[in-house]
Picture (tube, rainbow, N blue to C red):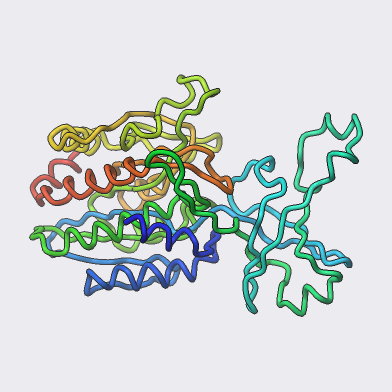
Length: 356
């Protein structure tokens, strides 16, 4: 699974531009599943099992990134955000611009410290202070490379193992979830389940969980499990802001919500069964609520309502060029998901989705 993740993390796939990730997911899932398709939105859907009841497991394919907004006469690129990124993490970062003619690596430029005035130092960083330097000499040279306004930009691949069981990389969010889907397909293909299982690699989560909504409306599953990464605590964040810790297992969430009201109150019954499954199989796990959203936010309000559970992987430095995860947490998440689904029966689904 680690090799699969490394492969996935190196593929460029900003929101709305996930074609190469989609191709990879189709090829990998077809190794285990006979029924793999891609819908008009770009969601990859692998199907296994038969029955009147159905379960959707969802992980998103996209990563946060940028889009080319303007090319100046000297060949410098200006950009806008494609997903939620803190501008501070962009300074002097290597990025890849993905044009129709190829991928070109550049660096996010920022005014040199030696040239900053006292007034400059007081101002927060804004996108207008940043540009991308590709080593070009003119806008005409940039155009010869096939780079145009609207082209996607992602962080340059940088997968690396550090310390003890620790991985740093761009796009941990959520290529680890995609790797878990592939692992699940391999592990569950020979098991007899009396329900239909949809494995969905959904597009455009980082810009509002759009792909998951379309998939949920089309498939109409009875319930869903979302696999994603979530912010973990760090040395300076107080625990009341982030209770999840890297290395202590998957996070089973009760609620998330952001300032715009997007979010999910997760099914209590599904969450309790996930906790019971973790305890039965000696899988360390954590609990949290958080001010954010995941694909569950659009899945659970689709059609007539779809009860959701979430199994989330704690990671640090979210939406940055070098996110950090403890690989044991990824493996434990994969195990918990597999044990939960392997032992699930249609009669259990009936009970889990019944409100009273």
